[in-house]
Image 1 (cartoon, rainbow, N blue to C red):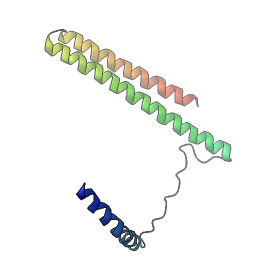
Image 2 (cartoon, one colour; image 1 turned 120 degrees about the vertical axis):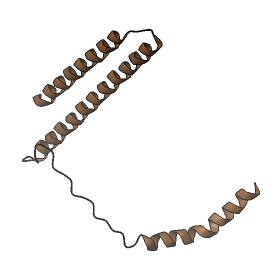
Image 3 (cartoon, rainbow, N blue to C red; image 1 turned 135 degrees about the vertical axis):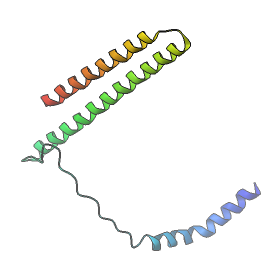
Image 4 (cartoon, one colour; image 1 turned 90 degrees about the vertical axis):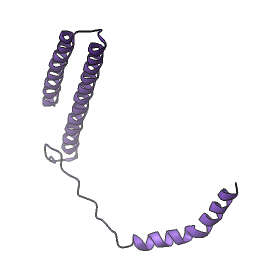
Amino acid sequence: MHIRLIFKKLARRCSPYFVICFGILSAGTHAALPQMEAPSRGEGNGIIQTLQNHGFDIVGLIALAIAAAAFCGVAYHAYGSYSEVQSGKKTWGQFGLTCGVGALLLVIIIWLLTKGTGVL
């Protein structure tokens, strides 16, 4: 309890000095913000077309996240199957079948997402 009281007093006395010190140190650091990058389809003729082009980029990013989640799911299932092979519950053939079906599933998911974003 005594140490906490000492730190409170020290913080009250030193805080104005810290603010002044950090203000002086950061006075010379003025960084300009970067310019906003245009969407992948270009800026467009008006605000609506520009927003549609940004929407296309957002949908592409969501499709990429779905593909990454599918990859993580297949990898998790394959790892579980591998651990069952090591414990003797499954055979190596079943593990190979799991990996093959998972790879085929990933190809189908990526193909469908690519076709779906092309519709936009």
